[in-house]
Structures are given as C-alpha cells and as structure tokens.
Amino acid sequence: MRATIKDIAKISGVSTATVSRVLNELGGYRPEVATKVLAVAKELGYRRNDSAVSLVKQATRTIGIVMPTVATSFYAQIINGIEDRAYQAGYSVILTHAGVNNVRLQESLNFMVERRVEGIIGVSINLAQIDLQAIAALAVPLLLLSAQAPGNRLPYVKVDDYAAAYAATTDLIDHGHRTIALVGVDPADSVAGRPRIAGYTAALQAAGLRLDRNLIFPGDYTFEAGQRAMTTILATPELRPTAVFAVSDETALGVIAVCYQAGLRIPQDLSVLGYDNSAIASMVSPALSTVAQPFYEMGQLAADKLITGLQTNQPIQSQIVPFKLIHRGTVSSL
Image (cartoon, rainbow, N blue to C red; front, side):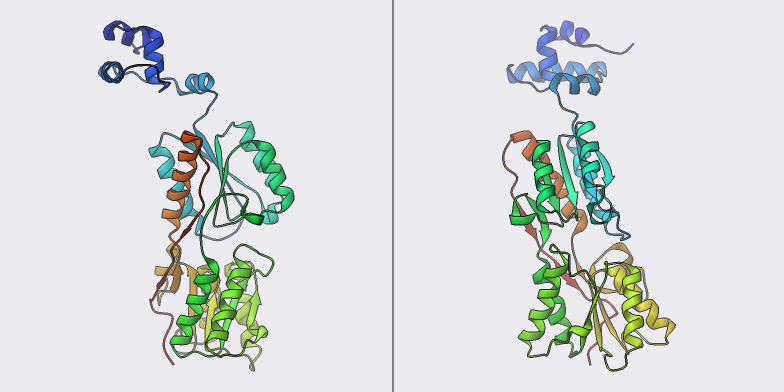
C-alpha cells in the first residue's frame, strides 16, 4: 500500500499539516522536525503527488524553451544542457518552435502560458519591440540564450559574436591569408549576423587589408547557404579567396562539399574555418577548424540562472561566455 502523509505524521509524531509543509518546502518548522519527517518519508518510500503540489503552490516546476525552426545541429547540445540542469533541480522542460522570423512566436508564448510554465528560455530568437511588449504582458520571466533583446531589456547568456568573428578572421590572417570570404551570414540578424560582419570587417582593417564586399555572402547559417556561396565563388574567378570564414559549421560543410565536387582540396586549395564547434565538426575528414561556443555549458548556465531567479525572486543577470578557437585540419598556412 502506498504511504500517505497521515502515515508519516503518525510515525513522526507531528501533525499532517507540518508534514505537508516539510514535504512542500513551505517553511514554518524547526530543522530537526524537517530531518525527522524526511527520514520517515524515505523509510516508508513515500512519493508525493507533484500535480497536487503544483495546484497548492500554483507552480508547475516547469520551464519552457522557445526556439526557431532552423536546420542547424547545435540546438541539441543547448537543449541537453538546459534539460540536464533543470531535471537536477526538479524541473521539467517543454519545447516549442517560434518558426522562421518568429512567425509563431506569439502562439508559442501563449502555449507556454497555457501550460503554466514558471519561466522561459528563448534560444536564438531575434526579438522586435512589439515582441517585448507581448513578453512583458505574460508576467513570466524570460531569459535569452544566444540572443539579445533591443536595448538589452531581457537577460541573456551568449558569446561575444563580434569578438569571436574578429578572432577567427585574425587567425586566418595570421596563417597568411589575405583574401578571405565571409559566408552564410544574415545581414538582417542584429544578434549574430551584424556583429560577425563587423568583427570580420574590423579584423581586415586592423591588418591593413581592403574590405571587398563581394566576398561577403549572405545566407541563413545552413549547409545550403555554404553550397550556394561556394558555387558562386567558383563561377566568379576574379573573387577566388584563399580562405573562407563560414558563420556556422553547417555552412562550412556546405562550402567543403562543393569544393570536393569541384576537385578542390581542403585545406591545400582553400582553408575553411567554421563557427560553433557542433558535433559534426569533428566527424568530417579533415576535421573542421572552428570557433567553439560552449553550447552544453551555455544551456546549463541559462537553466541555472532562470531557476535561481525563480527560487529567489531576484533579477536575472546577463552573462557573456568565452569562446575558443579550435584548430583541426581545414586551415593551413600560405
């Protein structure tokens, strides 16, 4: 037979109300009482009804993840980090997609509210002013991951994309490359796209190199964006960079795929540097040199910050996390 609160109260010598307060962490009891009640509960194999607890506390111990529908692989590491830390803290996680360009953002937010999530982590979501108004109306804490809100009006966890792009471009320059293409970047993306363009541009200027805007190939960070850019490069002999800085690992693989089809060798004929250090970066041959974002750790950090904010009712502080250049086999010196 399943143990009840009455059973625990009888053996512990306290009221059922006190047992309830201890099990639901509501306070109002002495530490020694809590120790005794919890020991008896463990001995009896008591399992609390979390649904009932949520109704009493008006809390679901659930956090939501909202992310765009984008065909890139790094999201898995972020979600794993969020889920692992959330589950360790006794929270469950639900996931929804806001769609490309946030076409379903309001629908996703409404879904989260209907599920009574306590907080939301928005992954790689570009927010406009009108989105901020909708979020403010929810009265649910929202933390951005790999994104920033206009005016930094929401807390965030992210890499400094400008600094990372500057470091990546400088690394290629240090390897002797002077004609470097930037591939797959979205110029309309104020969170990652524009800072990466700015970092790339600043690194060229700092090295005294001319910026050729024909070498900046717009895209959506996907494999196909890399394919399209490299196909254009091969069809335009006057461009012919000696190196490509791709703004995602999948974009870099798109570049490499077209090179192989054209008989070009990596890195002998073209150096390629990616961005993300997603799982696929080390699976290809040669393994991809890239800018590493600590996605799993970023997911953990975001979950920690959100849950701590929920439990303490304190403002969530933003944090820039470090990136690292990973040198593998797709970049060589001239």
